[in-house]
Figure 1 (cartoon, rainbow, N blue to C red):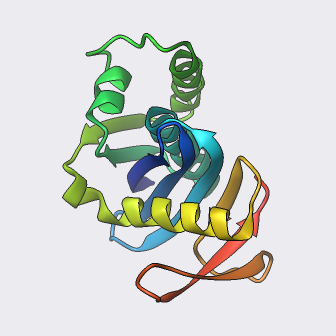
Figure 2 (cartoon, rainbow, N blue to C red):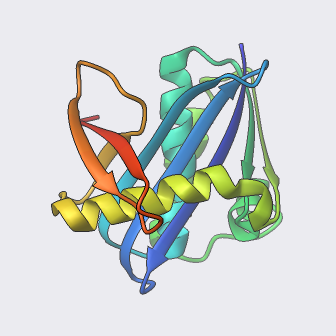
Length: 171
């Protein structure tokens, strides 16, 4: 099954409070998953790498075999595709984990887009950071933006004062 995935990561402070965001759609454009990963402290690059890792784990659970992933992190895309070397030891470890996960799929492509082309994943990052700060969530907590009766419902308010629904679950 083909999955279209957008990922993003961000950090307020770099290092500081951070989050990774993932949105997965099927070939017809139907959204299958929206989730974020909260960090009490991380760098922007760590959040970007963890977004890719989370996307691969989630895509495997959904049953994807061909993944078309898009990120606005040129560094991540070029390091994943072997154009740039990875110097940071923490990122090297994450990339080894990512490359191991990639082996579970028939095809995985990672391409670059400008920030404007990645607004949904960016929104998930910011929503996750805001919820994590407001609700004092622990480091490494995953948030599913879709409603599911098996998860604990959490109400938060974004800066636009729009009510959003998040679900909390352990991965």
